[in-house]
Image 1 (cartoon, chains in turn brown, orange):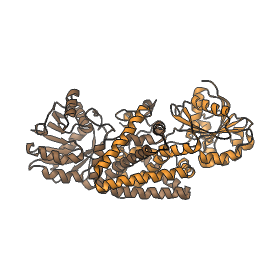
Image 2 (image 1 turned 30 degrees about the vertical axis):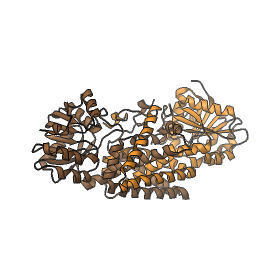
Image 3 (image 1 turned 45 degrees about the vertical axis):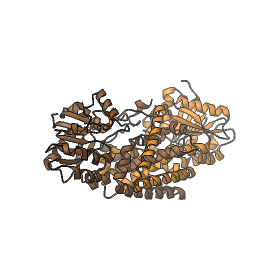
Image 4 (image 1 turned 120 degrees about the vertical axis):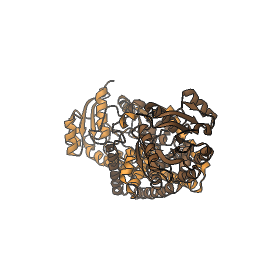
Amino acid sequence: MSQVYGKVALIGLGLIASSMFWAMQRGKVAGTVLGYARSEETRDTARRIGLCDEVCDTAAEAVKDADLIVLATPVGAMARVMQDIAPHLKPGAVVIDVGSVKQTIIDEVTPHIPEGVHFVGTHPMAGTEHSGPEAGFATLFDNRWCLIVPTELSPQDATEKVETFWRALGANTERMDAEHHDLVCAVVSHIPHLIAYTMVGVADDLRRVSDQEVIKFSAAGFRDFTRIAASDPTMWRDVFLTNKDATIEMLGRFTEELFALQRAIRTGDGEQLHAYFTRTRAIRRSILEAGQDTDKPDFGRGQGEK
Amino acid sequence: MSQVYGKVALIGLGLIASSMFWAMQRGKVAGTVLGYARSEETRDTARRIGLCDEVCDTAAEAVKDADLIVLATPVGAMARVMQDIAPHLKPGAVVIDVGSVKQTIIDEVTPHIPEGVHFVGTHPMAGTEHSGPEAGFATLFDNRWCLIVPTELSPQDATEKVETFWRALGANTERMDAEHHDLVCAVVSHIPHLIAYTMVGVADDLRRVSDQEVIKFSAAGFRDFTRIAASDPTMWRDVFLTNKDATIEMLGRFTEELFALQRAIRTGDGEQLHAYFTRTRAIRRSILEAGQDTDKPDFGRGQGEK
């Protein structure tokens, strides 16, 4: 692969930004990568592990002369960061964010974008339950989707270059408008996370089932929930606060459906339950066919468990 | 390992029974294994793939002279099966079930156990989303828990021999009473499954988010739900119908908690969300420490996805 941008600035050095750096290095996607994180501890860690070609003590320093600026902080901090760096951006620079919601970010960030600077919303749908500068790895985006959300500040050529950039990092790209993005993500990601958090919280609260038991027997279905529910608390707080409408709408649909199943259980309506569970099974088959998961009998995790 | 039972009869030849056969073969745990399944198609498949030393056309034939009889049908069919085989059991024989609930099975099955025959409830907490005679594999129970629920028809030596049997199949065993078993399983398994089924059903119902999108972007959290929600519909129908009380009680706790989080989202209470998400993260750490999952950054599934 060849260089897409000369100088890239990563603002925020967590899981996503650090993975972006290692993926840029792997593919020689950028000339120089400068990084900035608000916390001194994070900056020290980044320097120690060789994350970024240079770690700067201010965001202003990092973005100076940058061709691409990546907002990789929690969603709630992006508008403030944008205000801080705005005076230091060069004309023609492109700002992207990597947040999990789009409408709120666009509403809050774009007013601070200076004349002559471009903004494209991006959302790499990849992650692990780990966070911080040491959590990143070069293959995080490989074969994952990165949703591209152009705005009024996205000229066609800037958007296309951002797409080239993400593909050079290993991702597939797809364009979407902000509202639809937020709805899709509420369904495939935000609500599943909220539910997992809730389920793990309930288990933790119970007096009659000991923590020991919950942990010991977690492999029976609960374990996948705990992995999802171990994701970064700040990131997820911001996701729910900034994708409030779609989240609450989808939660309404979810509880409606859950109550219908609860009623079927209470009334002993086996037919309804069986029909429902048969329908959901078909969806799984489609996901396997789409190559988005493994069909190995042990879920491909056998080695880790034994 | 050495032989635990001379003659074993498997009634029902799905994922669990077929895995038990392969695990018995691996460890030379039984002298002879006879199998029976209600469906002719299943019996034919079993014969074709060499599942069991002999596949019988009636349950009566399979259990004749058996030292251990394994009820491995869906929970809802066990009482009827027990009635059918009861006249054919030899004195001193031990019957176990492998169902996911215990109180209902004990209530419905033990009245049909003849004088001089023993019954021990067992629940191997292992499975995949696949079902049927071809889904089994020898390592399914390795390092997984098998819960042992003694009843009034479980003399101490019979219970201990059943425990030896499950350990010879690779599992760890732990004793529990039926009521506690059903509560623990509601928390770590039944409710997570019901929630996953619900979430997948909601996504499938939505008009504004296409099936294509749900499938394409499933890796963002939703995917784990679809795997859980692809489990055998008949088995899970029976689980919910027979563990009704614990399920409905836990569902009540779950929705209460979910509504509290929903309220925090609606009112913008970021502190409450952050505190909740931080607490659930700690539980994940405990599960990793207990060796019940892998901590690899890609969840140990990287190979399957790429």
